[in-house]
Length: 420
Image 1 (tube, rainbow, N blue to C red):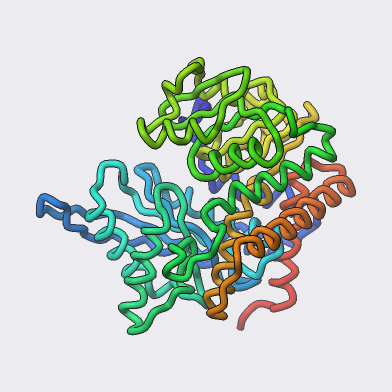
Image 2 (image 1 turned 45 degrees about the vertical axis):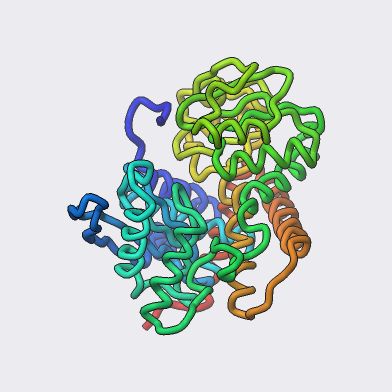
């Protein structure tokens, strides 16, 4: 749920972020307009046969935001509240995310309006294959490479890859990333978002004077990104995980939680709620926890003007996309909270997706230590670039990340010129 009094259009937020940076780097009006509009968007309505033999029409989207720096890249989400504006915003953020870590991709995003929790495996497979067929003219290894997102996974990608390959008449592993390893997936892809986030937290903590070892962490959203971040901060950096939450509620334990045990409890029961020895806490209480590090890893629009002044963390590392609204950034900056913006903090996923795509194109695969080593290099360098820009421009990290990213995309557009 959004802790806000009125619905917020995420695409308006995305455009507002572009305007903030465009003013600062003096982008001309034409370029600014290009950067505030998707290049291409497709809406599809398609029937799916349900298990009871009836048919239902589903609506899906694929938005390609910008291709100036390379093929589009972005996930596909299945969720009852998917909207075209949400997909547009996510495609924009993917564009900036790829640019801030300097990988040769543009941004895209896709989504289908559905409730995957209420659908069988067979229904999800038929929905996925039909959706993949509908968007097939827009995707491909040289054009647009989908990946998993909310309520999609490696199995979903396998179905898309197979559906696309059947139409081509030969296997095309590079059409998607986040695939099972047996179909051309990459080692390390499953934990890449959380691992990248943990690297950025480690680097930022040095500059912020925050200790990670022995420091306290709260994680809002104990899905893939949130749980992996918690596990790695706990296992590799010695942090104490004191609070976690999911869509059903949150738990708190001052002495610290073993995130692996919480993960096992969630696997068995469907939620972190009810984990032995913990106190139940609300979503607001998670966000307002007095901790060293807060990891918002749920959905958009969680930290707003209404609750930003109550955020108790010293570092906010956005493992989710768009959890903080622009007006909240100002409040957090004034409070001297170090915000690690989504387009930096959760870019580990798209970085290893890029590695997977590169491996598929070459037909040559890397061992896990090489994947993680390359990921660490990219995330450490990208954090340093953002921090340096923030210091030079005297701005918070989100504006710094957008300055870097938007400048890189704008430079590519200017160098290429406008066709025809």
